[in-house]
Amino acid sequence: MAQPAPLPTPEALNALGEGHLPGLIGIRFTQVGRERLRSELTVRPELLAPNGFLHAASVVALADTTCGYGTRLLLPEGASGFTTIELKSNHLGTARSGRVTCEARNVHAGRTTQVWDAKVHDEAGKLMALFRCTQAVLYPR
Image 1 (cartoon, rainbow, N blue to C red):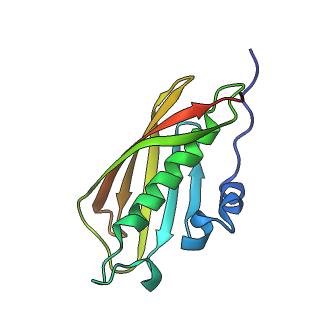
Image 2: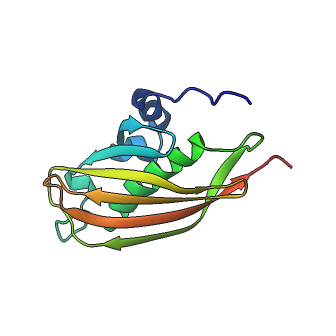
């Protein structure tokens, strides 16, 4: 049986996002594992809604990016990539400042789909959001 490819470092994943949405909004990976990843985002004015609270889309971008990068790590042999086919988020709180963190865990890593769950917490550790996404695994035609 073939050995799995070595895991990228958090710095390598951060470099992937440079010049793309993850880098533009400031998502930073802090821990990388085959079935669990952690990331963070510093709250700043550009990421807030007009009401002064962290925009829900900022939270979704953090969770979806963390789950998506995890999906990349578990792609089956021969797969060329993936695409999100469904995502759901429950927002239980918000933030106005500080740093929010995300932990994503793999629930299912099949040949045609992957399912990931994520939890987003504020700086005090309070649960802000629950997130689940389903990814379709893509193969060359």
